[in-house]
Image 1 (spheres, one colour):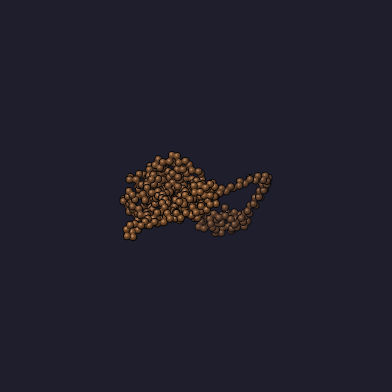
Image 2 (cartoon, rainbow, N blue to C red; image 1 turned 45 degrees about the horizontal axis):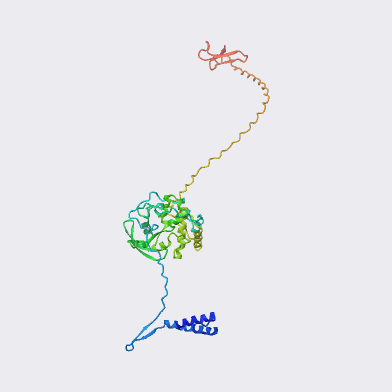
Length: 400
């Protein structure tokens, strides 16, 4: 305390040049007094923190009392969000309800996403974020975990069955326990169904529903929004606390802590947005592009809800018709003018009559044959062969 009083008095005399209550005659002496006061104050402060021995009346009894400055307050680490079921990631329902309509997506068929994530990202529209006005999980995306694929199980248990190993189930659907190789943190998590343990493993919408609502889902049909909320492509079993930290963040505001999983995570987000015709905001596009630059061949994923491509009908072989042969029609050549008829040839002269055969010269009275034959004598007398009264037995030549 004396040091502080001297410090104040010396400082007063040094500044004002007056003597003060201590009768300091000049500013030079005031400056010297100020130095002495500073040294005294420093020594006093050191002695204040040093232990002081208080002697008692007993035989050598001594109590050590240490006077210490007050401890500095330390910042209390704010606890992160706790794992808890929310409207975005609710518990599975007691009764499985089937969706009123079959699964429905925007893309025509599965071939649209059979490419790299980088190539698929280039097909997405880039727009600003739409207002969140009107968003309500149940009203816009249906009751939680509807049975959209009509397999008789709710979606949460379908995903637990898909992502957990060594599962134990009650009946065909309800998962009671299993082991999860958690993709976001890389931890191994044991899942046990219970009031205080089920929420430790939650089903994450890779593209959060509220994010989808602000990037195009407002334009979808109710059936398409329900499919988006229950599509296995958009769902992963994850650590509940990490899912709470993500909230409805996109790739620009949240990425999995495990860096080696980020390519797969971004590829899944891009595939979901392409399947349901959603867009990306500029910051989201930049983050996705940066991640995929480290894995340009990362494949996109295909939704089981997307229809299979229609079979391409084989072309029916057709027989080409035979070429039509056009036969040229000959131009008729005019017939030549008829030649004048040649005069009929003169008739051939009648052949000369054959000369009369030489007469058969016979001798009168000579035997002859046959009866009736004719002849002439050497002088030309006609004769006939036949019997006579004088020769009735044999024919002889006689006059006619």
